[in-house]
Image 1 (cartoon, rainbow, N blue to C red):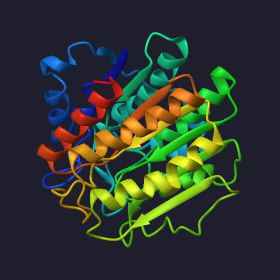
Image 2: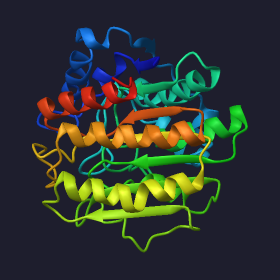
Image 3: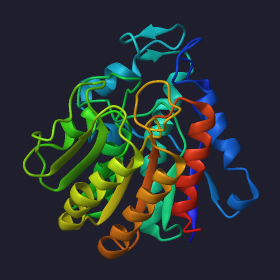
Amino acid sequence: MSVALFTHPSALAHDTGEGHPECAGRIRAVLRALEAPEFEMLLREVAPPATEGQLNAAHGSDYVAAILALPTDRVTQIDGDTIFSPGSRDAVLRAAGGACAAVDAVFEGWAEAAFVAMRPPGHHAEHNRAMGFCFFNNAAIAAHHARARWGITRIAVVDFDVHHGNGTQDIFERDPGLFYASSHQSPCYPGSGAASERGVGNVVNAPLAPGSTGEVFRAAWETQLLPALAAFKPELLIISAGFDGHAADPLAQLRLREADFYWVTQKLLDVADKTCLKRVVSLLEGGYDLTALAASAAAHVRALMRV
């Protein structure tokens, strides 16, 4: 199966400071893992910068302008976790632009799936708020780009990051043409994602208790999230691929392993095969133990390649 890998060196220039878990080493670790001979067939592509129009489709134009106007000659602390450095502007633009280019790749047909290895991540970025390491919501931007350019009306984002994607839910929850499903640890940052949060019937949350194993994770997907996704019948499937549910990750307490990420990716592909002509775009979100992140991302891409 042809799988495109979108990335750009700007992801390394987004400098969050010494000791910050969302660091440039994350991208180095993922790309190093994807240099293994088994990944030689990946179509390696440059992530382009997003346009302001693409950003404005998911975020308020005043908010977009404010982020793009942040100074590039010094560090700006947005909150305790979210840092904009002199090298951040191009990184945030190319993380979002790579997501849009990945959508184009699967609709143009030269790739059946795409993985965007960029940072900063995006799923905590709300319509008008940066938080949780995130500035622009790459998954939501990709969804709105797919709607605007390709004319589709049913787009799903599924999220297996250990943290709830409050930003994606915020942007999607009043739009019945967009669907959001998430498994995540609860209680955990950012404190959202209760099962009772249903949007307009287009949001499905599966909170998992700290210490939950792969068996619990798989059961939540099998019994709740995958059936809801299949019932929605998306024309495009976007994955917020966070690997911080791994047992080795320092920021949370789920007990997942690489095999669980491979399994859930396979199950998502099964739905995509039936509903959206195999069109799948995956975006890197969390994952903060570098060894676990590299191995988990490699397992995920291996599944996307159907090997």
